[in-house]
Image 1 (tube, rainbow, N blue to C red):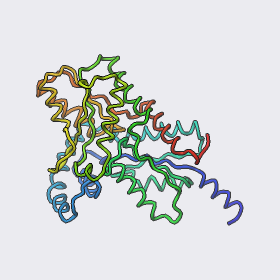
Image 2: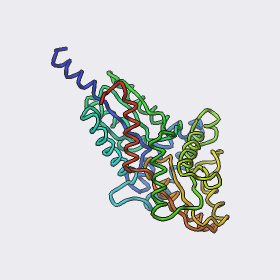
Image 3: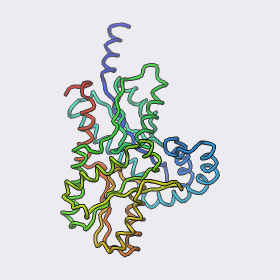
Image 4: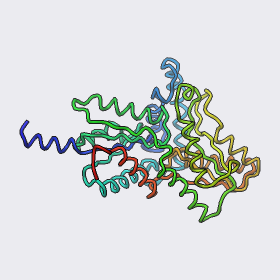
Length: 341
């Protein structure tokens, strides 16, 4: 290798790539787009841990023939004129994070966005980073609490894509950030700002995406990290034990999932005639179908039908400046030893 070529290679290898990964989104709120998206999502062995011989016929004969049309109708309720809320918010997060990192590291850090399912894919994101000359990579799944079906699946997909490269970059990963101080402060601030503008509520419900109970029995730390996050935010908000609770949403299939279930808790609170209920979803880095439709619309309707009063969904952290700064702080911590300020 010539001196010039070696210098070019060394310069490239010292550049760091950050791959932000979120769950994914269909390309359009249509049955066809949903069928394609759900096929990829529900074929993931970390998402549905049934034997393939058992799950395959269910998926292709029933789920993919019935669910796409229903899901498309739900997506149409929350779809923005510009496109998918999750994708658009994620792009703003990527840009905001890149700007913050550039103020510290200049052009030595390149940030790319990927979705575990759909587009842009993890393989595309990794190609973007390697093409930019990144010899070191930080894989950053935007799931504050670790679950095999989310963080684990995203990391596995990244490892699989990297395995095809002849020159595999140095690699680091963000496993979770459920108790990161900046993340907790941003969550608490998002609630306090709503209270300052519109008044306090009577009860705060922290709703997280659910997982099957068998995953917890197998060693998944997810529900414990969810409850830890909720406790830390409740402490910052100075909530008494009777003023808040934790529940798990988005149950799918017939197996037993982690409890209590969000909609059951919401109905129970409505039956108790709670006047003002605030629901916060700390496990979602960006608003999506599960927050904008399931919580903000369907659970609101369930609360009112049960006799409850005012229901308020507090948006995900999205591209709030304090959230982006927390993400930048997490990245900076993980880059120690790779880059100096």
